[in-house]
Length: 189
Image 1 (cartoon, rainbow, N blue to C red):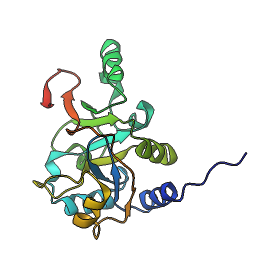
Image 2: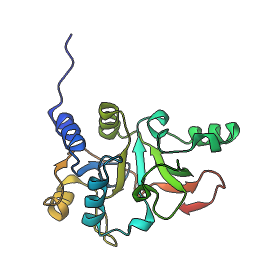
Image 3: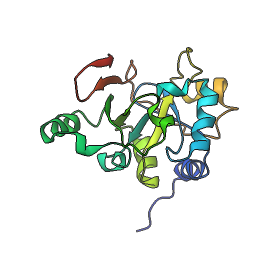
């Protein structure tokens, strides 16, 4: 039996590998992202968003192992790691200790990084295909409402994005909760 070829997924993989900006559905809104290891792509994404690089960015992945190159897993006590992993997959972004050698475009002015394991099938498929996380920031200019459907995204940002995955969000009404995994402090409910 041959594997089904998904041209939309292949186009997203090609865009990711070529340092391009991708728009895709997340849990509640559309996100913009790129390869977290490509500084030129990250700078392009920040320029599109008009986002302050000091804020840092979120990485989303299909599994915890994809996040290991970016988080300092050794700083998570075993009992806390169990708690962190029990919150996923789902719409909870957790702030974890960052590896020292990752780009400060990912961490901003912090020594932590915001990460999430998603269950949105299009993003899971993309992360599995490239075997890495993808940057995730809401599909809007800073301060504007994020796009909730791909048609709205294309009307607002279509000329700035090289590829849009024309899927659907998971239907959540609010963006992901953001918590500090070490302290439990909620940054965004």
